[in-house]
Length: 341
Image (cartoon, rainbow, N blue to C red):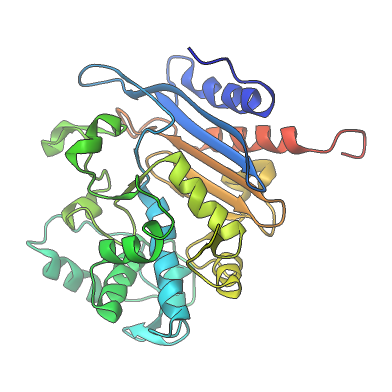
């Protein structure tokens, strides 16, 4: 048995564990990783990766999660990588007069989502999105925009999105636990998501939770990736270091900073989930399954919080208070001592 956490780790674990208590817990388990300027402050796991629909499986530091909309960070990074290489310009139209930047910043005019399930194949699903009216001039967080962006990247590069993510991001960074459609070799490490008897899927584990990503075969611009806290911290550290991870460069510093500062997939500092860590420099994303990643290049802070809050039902943990609580605990632990701190 490992020693109980102390210092920063103890405070973060306590904040996260509080949401596993009571008659309506927000989630059955979590993995968190906090770091500052390359030094890991906490990497802890608690609770259950699987608590319903079979034998209980404890959470571990290397548990693999369906990261849901954190997948958008990878799609965005691929887009900026290709733009840096001259494959297209972010400010030029790439689809129906809409720019890549508009797709990345959710200002394309597309609605948030439609159900792609009733359509017979991917071509029909994409055609349904193509036929939607656009309402430009306002920001609407849109899964559909990132589905379109994924198909644009595939067309521009001549390769599938999963291959692009592996080639440009996860492969160079050694993120061996990150990818779409995890295989049988890692199934025992995957956290379960929702119990869906109405779809015939039962307790979903190892296949994507998001309905539209599922209909698209598990690979889509808005969702579909699985990852671990360690791998996500690697991506965050790469952003901190201006596109470098040790000797490996995936993106130039100016392009990396533009990606986070202009909200190109990496959404800047919303206090509703970043809590006391929110700042003009902070960016990141959340995922519907209960995941989040935060990075602040000014303070050097990285916070990864992965939960399976939709296991067994999406009715739990909807307000995201647990994300703020853990962020607040980290901010408090890092605050300078003394009355001015």
